[in-house]
Image 1: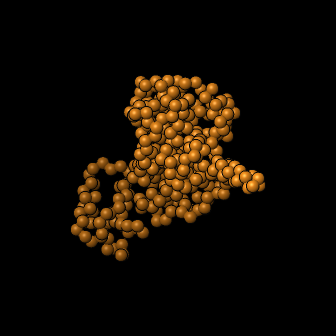
Image 2: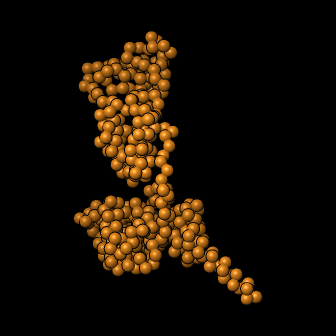
Amino acid sequence: MAKRELPKHVYRQRNGIYFPRRGWPSQKFESEFGTPEFWREYAGILAQKDKPRKVVSRNFGGLIDSYRKSPRYRNLKPRTGLDYDKHLDFFRQIMGEMNPAKMQRKDVIRLRDSNAHKAYFANYSLRVLRVLMEHCVDLGWRDTNPARGVSELKSQKRPEREPWPRDLLDAYRLACPLGTRQRLVMELCVGTGQRIGDVLNMRWSNIEDGSVWVRQSKTSKELWVPILPELQSALDAASKHSLFLLTNEHGVNKWSYRGASAAVRKVREQIGALDYDIHSWRYNAACELLEAGCGDDLIASVTGQSPAMVQHYTKKVRQKIRAVRAQQMRTEQGRS
């Protein structure tokens, strides 16, 4: 389709037809060119000429603002959205006034490599930039995504998580008496086997008939988990003046992930448990169930994990249990 066939201020780009008139917000036509619906759209745009128009600056600041209003961003899980925000704010800080249409693949690689000493940060930034530049393409600001296909940095593999050893759990309980938030968050994580985000979302109304109802934010699974004695003692000692089981220092709103993580880290430093974090408590739940003789289906009925994740969380303990059994069989065979 030649430009002369299109009406004034209308241009065809790779992913559609746009109205990119200077001083006007760029708008993509939803209807096919030449149809009555197209001409109604075009007339509607021109009819706005006497109305005040918000001019969108085609820089990274404007792109980030637009992305945060888009379904791509609004549909992110809350925790993922917080992670994205860190990198979006980073992009705004270092290149807020730059034109994203001029970014090239070499610029993406340079940005990635400038953070090579922080491989996880560099790789996550690359993922967020890839999504952001895809939004840039959707807006019609450019035709291609320069971050697509750029490989992530190879990083040193992190040690696999393990459940907290029994002596460290005992030390944690000793350092955090009943009635403290630090004690309750641990008993909830270990006792229910849920992710920290789901634990922080738990309300007193979720407690029913000696059990807690959980709706997992990541999987949308609904679980009914009976409460263990250790957790019941912590719940009995907790304040019940809020909707949430775990509240901030004011005792009103729910405890934030950042606040809970910082408070637990102080205890970990105090008892020498920095190798074990909050998420390791979920490993404790799965491994304790395995050691109690539960099969994978019973473990999953508490944790809500897939069969593959049950295997992953319990593989080290599972190996020990099987090795003990194998050696016992070996000894018995030698005696016969």
